[in-house]
Figure 1 (tube, each protein chain N blue to C red):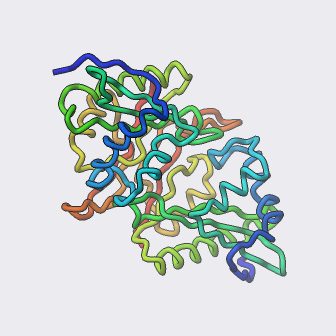
Figure 2 (figure 1 turned 90 degrees about the vertical axis):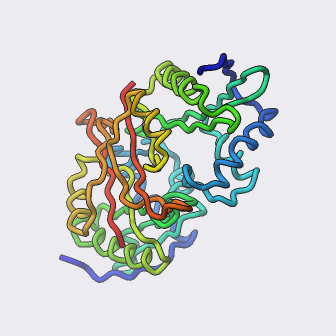
Figure 3 (figure 1 turned 135 degrees about the vertical axis):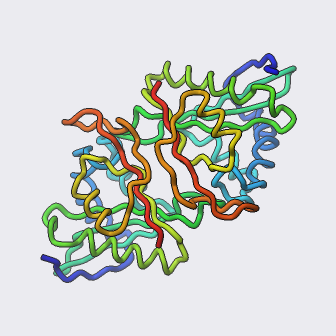
Length: 164
Length: 164
C-alpha cells in the first residue's frame, strides 16, 4: 500500500533521523557489508560521504527513508552510478523503497549517468533482490560466499546492474 | 624473464617512485577507473589510503612495482580482500606483476582473508585478465559497457575472484 512521500535533500538536521534508520540495519549486519559496531559518526560519515548526494523521504512530517547517489567509479567508469537505500522499520512494506528507487533512477538520468550498479547485494536479502529485479536490474555477477551472514553463514553477494 | 625482486613496505620516501609509476597509468586512463587528471596528491592518497597496506618491490635498488592490499568490504564482507598493482613501464614483461600477486596472495592468507576480489578489471586489459586467470581468478561478473576506454569506447569491466 504506497503512502504519499515527499522527497527532499538531506541536511545535518536529519542526522538523528538517518541514524535511527541506519542503526538497526547496520547492527543487524545481514544486508550491508558494514561493521556491525559502527559508531553513529562513522555511519553518518559513510552515508553522507562528500561525493554522495543524499535524499530523505518524509511521510506525515517524519522521515521514513533515505538514499544516497554517487558515481561508482572515476575516469572511464564515471558514467555508472551507485546508490544505497534505507527504510525506517516502521515504514516497511509501504512502497517506500520502490518510490526512493524510482526517484534515484530519475536523479541519476538527470545527472547524465548511463547505468546504475549495486556492488554488493546479499543474496539472502530476497526483498531487495526482488525489488531490484522488478525495477529492471540484472544480476551481472555472483560473488561466491562473499558475505558471512550472522545466522546463515556464508552466502553469495550479487552485483546488479541496469542501464538508464 | 623474471628478475630478482625485493619486497618491502612502502614509506613516504617512496612517494616519488609511486607517483612516477602511477602517473602514466592514470593519465593513460585505459586500465584504472580513476580520473585521468588526478593530482599527485590525489593519486598518492588513493594508493596509500589509511586502510591499505602498501608494498613496493625493488630490483637493482630501484622501485619497479607496488601493490596495495585492503579489505574489500566491512562487516560480513570483511573476509574478502582487494588489491591493486602497478608496474614501472621500464619493468614490464619481467614477471614483476606475477611476483607481486604471489606476494599479495601470501599476505592476504597470512592476514586471514578467505578470498581476493578485483572489482573492476577492464576487459580490454588482456594482460591483466590473462595474468589473473592464470593465477586462479575466475570471472564472476561482467559489467556491461561499464568502462569508457579512451580509444575503444565502451568496453566491459570484469569482476574477478578467487578463494585463498
